[in-house]
Image 1 (cartoon, rainbow, N blue to C red):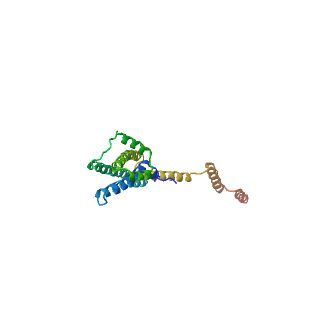
Image 2: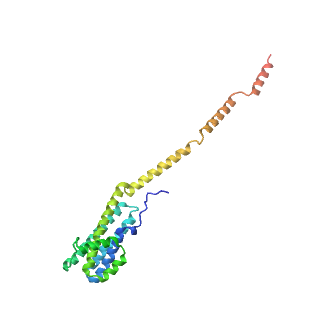
Image 3: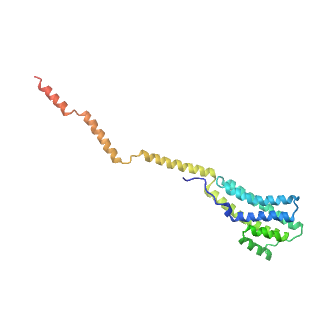
Length: 231
């Protein structure tokens, strides 16, 4: 049976989800290596990284019944990662560490590597042995890449909304189609399957009616016999 509830793809197959998962893992380990557990920034950074990942998940699940909610949650994911980006840049700036220029050799190499490697286990191991400056810059590059992917996802979701409408529009359209299909079926049931059979039946009824109206031969003979007896 057809349904207006459209099936959505597996969010785990989305590249942006995989990147956001790596960002969360790096942030979790980064804050435990280089920040104090009592530092409020630790909790804020982990929560921002988690929000970026989880809102992609929730948005994907919400898409079945609400494209509007999906779009809002994707925007929340994007905003959360932008907040996290600011935290990493603040960390480097106040400690007088280097924020890699986007055209520097380190940044270019890292961007190329991150664009083709999505194994979160590799990044977790890398965080354990690299300096805070390097790890923070890797995280910054990944956040920039996730931001581009999220913007592309938002653009696609907007296009889907314009083409398909919201869930209420889809429900109304599905209802109209259902009623139209069932109304056509009802009309078909009322039509005779063989028009010629109806004509034969109507003809039979007409003849039967005439038989009742025309006197039988026996009735005519009685009438004549009675006439013969009259002098």
